[in-house]
Structure formats: C-alpha cells, structure tokens
Amino acid sequence: MRVGACGLNNTDINTRTGWYDSKVESSVTEELGLHGRDDGAAASWNKSTVTFPRIQGAAVAGVITAVGGSVEPSRIGQRVLVDPSVRDPSLPRRAQLVEYLGSERDGGFAEFVAVPSVNAHAVETSLTDAELATFPCSYDTAEEMLSRAALAAGETILVTGAGGGVGTALIQLALVRGAQVVAVASRSKQQRLEALGVHHFVARDEGDLRASVEHLVGERGVDVVADVVGGSLFGPVLKVLRRGGRYTSSGAIGGPMAAMDLRDLIYKDLEMYGITNPTADTFRRLVHLIEEGLLRPLLDAAYPLEDLRMAQEQLLKRAHVGKLVVVP
Image 1 (spheres, rainbow, N blue to C red):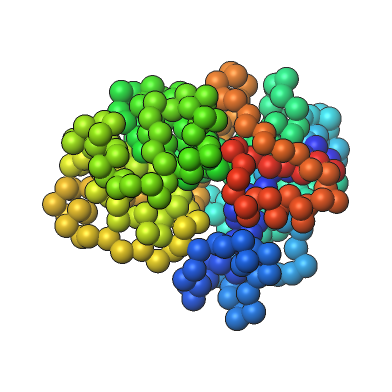
Image 2 (image 1 turned 135 degrees about the horizontal axis):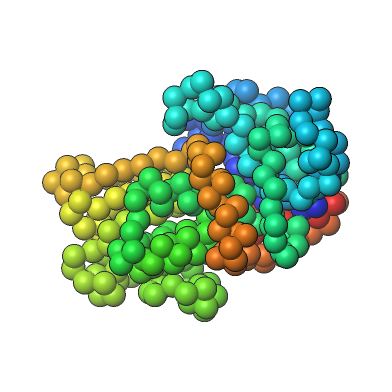
C-alpha cells in the first residue's frame, strides 16, 4: 500500500534504543533517545527479534495499491487505516501479538509498506491521511486500557502523561464513555487539555498529588488510573485510587522501575492491568468511532519524511499535545 502518512510513537524510540530490555532501568530521556545504548540491550518487548536495518513507523494511513493472490483485487484503491499488531490467533488471547509494524516487520516511515490484509481496515472519513495517522498505536492502546479497566459512565478517571499521544487518546475515549477526567501533565499543557474537555487538571511535580486530587474529587478518590508514566509517579497514583479501584498501564516513560506500598494493592482490593496487545476487536471499535466522528484528531505537527530525525527529536522533547506525523 502507498503510505499517506505515518504517526510517531514512543515505541519507535523504545525499539531503536533497546529500552524494552529488562537490563534498562532508566526513563526514556532525550539523551537516550538521541544517541541510543551500546550495552547490547534487546530491541523489542519481544526480546531480540528485531533485526536492523529496519524501517520503523507503526501508525499508517494510506491507500491499497496492490494485493496478494488470496486477496480480492477489488480492495485496490481502498483507503485504509492499519492495525499495527500482527497476531497469531492460535495463541492465548493476551499473547497473540507476534509482530509489530516498525519493530518485527518493516513499517510506515516509507513511501510504501506491505501488511497482512486483515490488518488493513477500510475507513470512510473526510479526515486527511495526516489526521488519520494520529490514531493507530495510541488510540487502540488507550481503548484497550479503558476496556480492560471497564471504565463506565459517571466514574472518575485520572490520566497521567495526559498531553501525549496515548494520554490525549485516553481523555477523548473516556469522555466518549461519559466519565469524569482528571488530567496530570506539565503546567504548560493545561489550557490545551482543558480545551479538550478534561474536568480537572493537576500540574505534574507541583505539590502533593494525593492532596491535589482529593481537593478536586473528594477523599473517596478516583475509580480508575490510566498511567503511561510509571517511575516515581507509580506509588502516588495508587494512593488516589478508591477501594476497589482499577489501575491500567501501557507505558513507563518516567522510568520502568517503581516502588509501591503493597498495602495499597492488598487492603484496597485494587485491580491492575498491563496492556501490550490490543485485540483485533479493539481496533475495529476504534475505526467505528472515527467513522462516527466521535474522536477528534490531535495533530500537533506534520513533517516531510526526510525530516524524520527532526520529528523524533521533537517527540523526545515532549512539548507537544497530541501527535506528530511524517508524510512521504
């Protein structure tokens, strides 16, 4: 298929630098993202299955230009959004992810990309390719996080890293569900997140998180925490969960090593979910929400493909709200 646009995601940086390896204990710093590691760390969540050179890029929107022998030729010319998770359905439901676009197989930072036909979802929308490319990876991950945590209308959710790709996806998808949203991000992003519809904003690293949240929502706390930061924030966000609350995470941009008070887990009867493999049903749900116009693409900036390095440098600065994409 011809690539119309491809979104940038933290997984591009994590894979390129070997951050997924358990020997890595630091956060994904700008220095690490720019210069990588030299200690032989594995490139992928899937151990050492990534080989280089590799064309990265997981979030692809474009048009089918050719098909294999077992695919209907009528699909040629179809506008599609690509599910980046290549699955083996014979494996257990939460272990089906065997290849990821831009990691174990070549991805969308290119003019053309080959994907399994089942991963290319026809989409009918007036959005541009650059806008469409803001959705894969971030929004299917966020939708899986909320689905696993069973977020319901009227509940309150706290979202960390709220200005990033997954964070802004979590906000929109939580609002679609009718939930109350507490966003945690840097102060510089407050106005943009409030414009997105969050009900409460808490500045990261300013004061006591628990006291700030309880001031906004009451001592009972929040029903769900959706966390992509981890690190030193992990313990404090468990403190703001109510008894019987749910914690769901898909990332640790603040660092993979975290301390916790096990009494929060045990005596508050918490549930905890780790998300790596959104299901195929989740991606189909995402496409439906896009076609229904229920999600707003948050395109912070688009770069020509030849400026991919510059785009990744901007991603590492984490000053954007929403998504960055490249366009061939």
